[in-house]
Amino acid sequence: MEEKKYKATETIIKQGDDGDQLFLVDQGLLDCKQRNKQNEEKIVKSYQPGDFFGEMALLYNEKRAATIMAFTDCVLWVLDKETFDTFIKQPVLEKRQRYDGILQKFPILQQIDPYLRQQIADALHVVSFKAEDVVFKQKDKGDYFYLIQEGQLKAFKKGEEDEDEEQCVFEFCEFDYFGELAMLKEIHRQATIVCETDCILLGLDKQSFTKLLAPIHDVIKQGTGRYLNFSFN
Image (tube, rainbow, N blue to C red):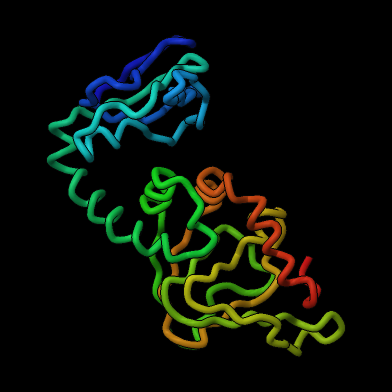
């Protein structure tokens, strides 16, 4: 990989150009701008250290879909197309194709932008649990949000007076989700989650939840109303 430095306001890639490089952000902030059919340009997302861009043109042999401009001085690491095709392209395509179809089955993700959904597929951590396994316990630190690909789970909450007594307060099924309270409210886990059956879960870490699911955070917040009867904070 080659290190490249850009000054603020400098354009890194331009919408409509051919794409032959992938960029990883080491330092700095960048804006992603798209021009619509009315020739109006607007910022559709931003990039920060740890993010990457430019992969769509390499994966699908398409023109650049957006213009990326440095908002501050930036340090980027650049990967050429030949190296990308040799080492990265096929595994990324396979994962995106496999999980994009699965993600479309989740009601909460059906209205999300297809490109963003593909980025969610990239960020997924796939984990399997056996029946009766504990995913996390009440009062644990919350660092993952989970989508349920397969299986059924139950939420158990300890009594306020008798902590030895646990009550089942909620049940989760296929294509549901859980773990959002700790992410949205910066609090510890409010219940213990136990697998009722063997399960396959799709996990997003806190950074991915915050960035990639930002467009539906309000929808997720509204969904927390389903817990009101069970004294969840």
